[in-house]
Length: 182
Image (cartoon, rainbow, N blue to C red; front, top):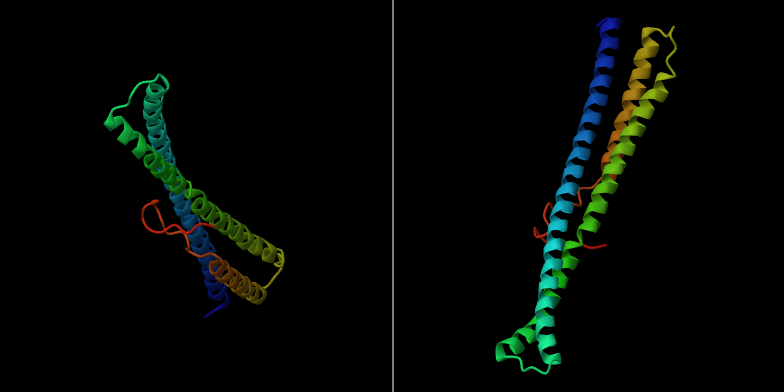
């Protein structure tokens, strides 16, 4: 194989690797951001429903309490309802707390997204730093040697970044399984 073909092969492999690495990480960033958005939307809906249910239970309790304060006698149904409301409010508060667990999951997603963006920036920085080692008058052998070093450095960086990033946040909905907090 002549020198031009060797050089072209190295450049093609390097550019292909940079493109694949960047595309893969940007796709993961996009996926993490979409998952974060879905978690936030669902959590807000659930929090709103829980707080509205708490409000409804408290309003219902207040009606019976107002009757008692006026010296009235509540019906047996009102008494039973008043007793049930404490448990009902507790259930709604627990639902609100469960909905707030999204904060931990979204923090994990955002942290992972930031690591990907930082890793991609460092990856591109490595590419830029090695380009400074290339003089305009470099011959083909020097270029091939430099491209080999750059490809190796980028491959190592890519593996290191992949090992740091874990897929710990798999839930897309709050009910899809156990939620590990903090």
